[in-house]
Image (cartoon, rainbow, N blue to C red; front, side, top):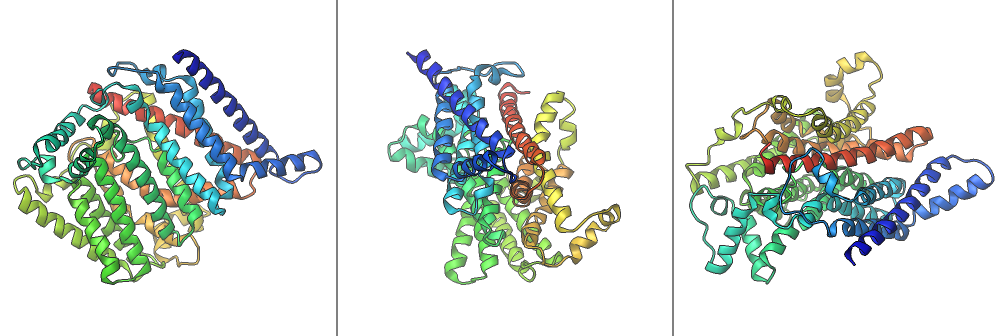
Length: 506
């Protein structure tokens, strides 16, 4: 019976995939005005694609059937092999992910419509979930794909059975207890330990993506279309350090980093400086400090960077740099005071700035495919960012590139995208941490890279929107469509490989 359901689900998924693919191809081929049947066909396809109900049903169907195709695949332990996870994953799972990605690309032109934008954000959440659900669904035990989670589960279980015990200094539940306190509350409400640690990450993924959208809305001066596309670019990140595969202090720290950043940006842009608006910011930063140490460090560095970019450039943020600076100083002071008092033997600011292995050296032992799959997503985001940067700064010749630093300094806020660009430039210090290899162990430069990428996404999304909205050649639009789907699929492979390597110690 299980096999019959699997075959039936794969058939339906293939059927849905064929329909979406045909619509996509015909849509691209009939975008320009023509005569007769082509015009009528183009108008009909446009009505279909811009119908949020239709696109919602397509995306949800693809997600459900993709989930069904892997539901009966069960693995007890991680195994060797460069394509192990691709081998155990049904082919139509990949078709389902491609359908969701294709549907999102088709909706890019209609994000001015609030209902379409809502469906677009929801679809981005489903794409993120589809990419990351393979491990919780396929593996029979959580420790099979993340050994570290055993310690977190033991602590949470002991809190429920024996009472809250923060333990000794140097343990996460003592130094950064927020994730354990959250787990304790839900376990007390009757949710099983296994279910919570399997499912909680997906709720945090959705929260993180929505926060990315809210941040984008603020720095884009309420251009919610751009914010939605930035969230979409964030949804298929190939890295696992920032949005961890398991429930952990790292993942909770990511959520409170994004929440704190959103509240800070909103406070600075709106400049409603009163107790009602300031208190949520201060409280969120305090909870972040209780959540994860590196996430707190990254917020401090980001706020200092935003202060510098606001001061250095001429934008709507000019004159507001002092608020980024003051909140950065507040975060650092509170973090240092808390750490020095709670865990004095562990907390040392110099630990966080010691040089570790340079990211380039980490690539020397990797295979060519692993290197290509790793750089695909960051280079895709960076390429979209650089294109828009050069366009906003009106760089048209080599001499303009030489004067790029001066152009950034002297450019004024005449371009509607300038404030968004200034925000992304505020992550320059985060980029410096990555390039210089400042981290604790050697995996952390890649975690820093993820923070840098979320800073670039709002500007990178502008390029993707312009390709979809303008009237370039059909070949150019189709090329971007194919490239986006390709990067998504390659990012999934990289995501699988890094978790496999972590478990197997490679």
